[in-house]
Structure formats: C-alpha cells, structure tokens
Amino acid sequence: MTRYAILTGTVLGLLLSGSQVFGREYHVSVKGDDGNNGTAERPLRTISAAARLAQPGDVVTVHEGTYRERVSPPRGGRSDTERIVYQAAEGEHVVIKGSEVVRGWQKVQGGIWKVTLPKTFFGQYNPYRDLIRGDWFRNLGRDHHTGDVYLNGTSLWEAAALDDVLGAKDGHRWWYCRADEDKTTIWADFGDADPGTALVEINVRRACFYPEKPGVNYITVRGFTMRHAATQWAPPTAEQIGLVGTRWSKGWIIENNVISDSRCTGVTLGKYGDQFDNTSQNTAEGYVKTIERALENGWSKENIGHHVVRNNRITHCGQAGIVGSMGAVFSTVTGNEIHDIHVRRLFGGAEIAGIKFHGAIDTVISRNHIYRTWRGIWLDWMTQGTRVTQNLLHHNGPREDLFVEVNHGPFLVDNNLLLSAVALLDASEGGAYVHNLFAGSIATRPEPTRLTPLHKAHSTQVAALKKVAVNDERFYNNMIVGHNGLARYDEENLPVKMDGNVLLSGARPCKHEPNAVVDLKFDPGIKLVEKSDGAYLQIALDGAWAEKQKRPLVTTELLGKAVASDLPYEQPNGSPYRIDTDYSGNKRNIDNPFPGPFARPVDGKKTWKVWPRPDLR
Image (cartoon, rainbow, N blue to C red; front, side, top):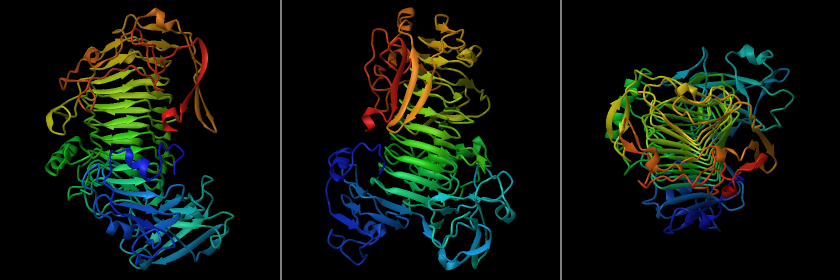
C-alpha cells in the first residue's frame, strides 16, 4: 500500500465516497479454497472466485500473499453508494501479478540461459507471439513483444536479435524470444544470478484488473500492489487495456495502490474496442470518426467517466502512467506519484506521458507528483472545463512538463510547480495559466490545419469543429524564470490577456503586458531536494514584488469567456472559480495576491515541503 495514502481500511475508505450500502464481505486468502463460502473462517483462494460471487454493496477483502491472476469483475455496483469494493486487508501486503514463475532454464554460455515453454503454459494468450502495434506507434525499425522477463523483480530489456543477448550490448541485461504455434523459447542474460534459485518471472496476462466487457460500473480497487502486465499499445482510437483499467464505464475508484511494470500502460480510463480499432491512418479525421462512434456508443455524462484515481504510486510503464481516450471525462486524478515512464525508449510514438488524456472534459488533475517521464501531462483534444492544479513536475524530458494540444478551452492551469527544462508547450487556445512557477521554457506551436471538437458546456455533445486560432490565452500572477519567458506570445493571432506576472533571470515579458515586473538579474536559486520524508523546494522570493504591482484576484469574472467556445472558465459543477489559495492550500491576500504558487512571501531563500503535501499524509 502506498505510503501517500490518505485513508486505509474498509470503513474510512467507504466514507470517502458517501454512505455505502453494506452487503456481504467475502474473504480471500492464499490458504483458502474456491470451494469455500468466503467467510473469514473459510476464505476463497482466488480474487476471481470472489468476483463471481460479489453483488452490488459487497466487499471483497484480500489477505496477505501473491495472487497470480487477472481479476475481471463480471458486474459492478448500482451507484456510488452501492458499489463493489475490492480491497487489500488493512495492514497486509497483497500482490496481484500478471506474470508466472518460470523454472527449467538451461545454461547457454556465461550468464546466458534459455528455456522452452509449451503453448499450454500460456493458455489462450501468448505475449511472446503478440507484437506491440497500433495507431501512432513507432517501432523504430524492430519488433517489440507485449511480454517481458523479470529477474528478482526487475525487468530485463527486450533485444532486437539473439546476438544482442549473446554479446555485450550497452551494459544492459537483455532477453529475446522466438515463438511458434507449439512452443516459445526465451533467451535471457541473468549475469551472475542462477535462475534455478533466483526469482524469474515472465508476463503471461494482458492485465491484472480489467473487465471482460464495458459497462461494469462503480468498482473500487484499493490497497493492492499490482505488477507485470503484457499490455498492448493504447492509442486513442482503439480499446485501451491497462494493467488496471475501467473499460468504458462509470464511477470507479482506484486508490492507494502500487502499480508498476506494465509493458505499455499502468491505468487506463479509456475507450472500448470495435472493428475500427487502429484504422485511423494516424489522422485527425480518423479520430473525429472515432468520437462520432463513441457518441453512438454511450459517450455521455450519464454513462461514462466520473472516476477517481487517487494516491497511487505508478511506475516503470513503457508508454504511460495513466491514459484515457474520452473515458476520463468528469473524473478526478489526484495525489498520485507517477515516475519512470517510458525511460528505456526502445519504441516511440504519440500517447507517451505520465498522464495522457484525450477528451478530459470537466476533469480535475490535482496534487500529483510526476517526474522522470518522457512528458509529464499531455492533454490532447477536447480539454474543456479541465483544471490542472497544485501538481509538482520535474526532471521530465526531453519533452515538456505540460503539453496542451489542439484544444479550444476553456481550461485552467493554476498553482503548479513546473520545474523541467521545458515547462509548457502550448498548441491550443482558451487556456488560463494562473499562479504557476515556470522554471523551464514556454513554447508555442501553431496548429492551423486540424479541425478538432469543442463541446456544449459540461457535456460530451459536440458543438462544432474548429481550427486552433492561436492564441486566446490568459497568464495571470505567474512566476517565470529564465529562458524566453512570455515573449513567444508577442505575435499571436488573438490578443492574449496578461497581468501580474513576475519575470526573472532573463525571462522576457510579452508586449501585451507592459507593466510586468521584470528583474533580469534576480536568480531565485531554484533547487529541488529529495529527502527521506519527501521533496523540498529551495527558492528565493522578494517581498517587494507585492509592492511593485497590485495584482488581481483571479476569478471566473476576470477570466471571461474562451473565444472559440464562448464559454466561461468555471468549475465542473458550474460554480465560479476564485483562486484564493496557493499550492500548499494556504489562503492568499485577496486584495493583492502574491505572484507565483506560494501565498506567503518572505525575503530571501526559503525551503518549502512540496511532496508529500500535508493533505496527502
């Protein structure tokens, strides 16, 4: 169970989602038997057996041990107060794995071993015959399988050829496979380890927790460690199977889990599959057709989304930590630690990020810690009514902390710490950036050709298709350090709105903000320090910035309406914004709020604890 969990245990967890209707509690134990009745005295052996029995209102409590199975709940709850809960027993370490232990390795040479497995070892799905593929995927000139090999819990690297395993290659340990209808042979470099005594596992299942059909609603998954899934590439135009996934449903809560070692994606809040999967020809027009089919297949506020993904630790996934095409609407993603995503870079493509959403309508992304990813957060198409707030992003690259692509808004980005070399890539319109710390560069990219949707207020219904005019943007009360500052917005097609920004260490102001506070020589000395109890930000501030310019309190009224959609900047429930608290939740001076993410200025250098946040302990 992640150390950043807010609450644990059956009662406290259920209180977070309202008054739960209590039904029966089924117990699962590695010492149990699926012929038992599931009581504490006579527990079941597998989580899947409990899933077949659980009805709306029931709780499945899983006890200490490792469970090698794919849990595919056949049904969900009826409402948020009558859901089916799957949880690890409080204080017990419960692991669900999509892998199996492999014995019988034969030594080839040095640290190289091989094993040959019959097709019966895999059943209906053999990841070593399944190539990673799909729309917007780039194989970089070689094959990649959905399987993987683990030595004592750490995955090896898949080689393009057997010679790469037999000979030294880049200092990594590699594996390679050949498979036909009857058998699969795997070669692996175990170095000094003996696979006869070490723990060697290979992926054999597509997922750890994923339904067999769409529309399994109101499920809670809490407190597990889930590892080793042979996930396929998850583009926005195809079914998105994750190590854990909601599969085109409503009302899931995924909380307090450790999720790691997915071949492609960790958590999916995504699209169903149909006969048109991976047929978009990698075009915007192909995705527009996908959206049209999704609307015909129930994409609405009544049927889809409303998920909560909170306080999970998501690591070592090849494509994305959390991904979702249209299925993340009206959802909340908060308090997650996401790191080491797409770090090997043996393949490429779009859809690679710590969080990658298409159609994040009225979705809140808050209080997450995202680092060592290819790209931190990528919001692509239909980012409308979305809020990105109080997130800590650093050491992401070579791409950006935040990429917003072909959106029309309105969407709000406030109180974030964007500390990577590239903080923002803006290829959208209708964004409002408020009280952020931009420690990296800000880039813009024109998108004059693609027609992308905008929607009716708080709805999935498409109102129109438009091109991005670039750049109906708002920048209020931000702290911007070095690089190009806001000068990239000098020549945009639409006038941007800017006020109250502070630009330091050479950062240049935009001509649309003649009264910006500019201190070319002030170096805030930004440094993120990792300690045993969390992350601390060292930064120097100048209290005089409050006196040099009177700043507005940012509200819905101040932000106005996004030009393309003619809609106001407001919260998902329709209530107005009032940005009167800071990154840490402290109250701002509403008469003259201090610039940047911290409300209480002090002269000179100060150290702020920025992770875990006080409200995530």
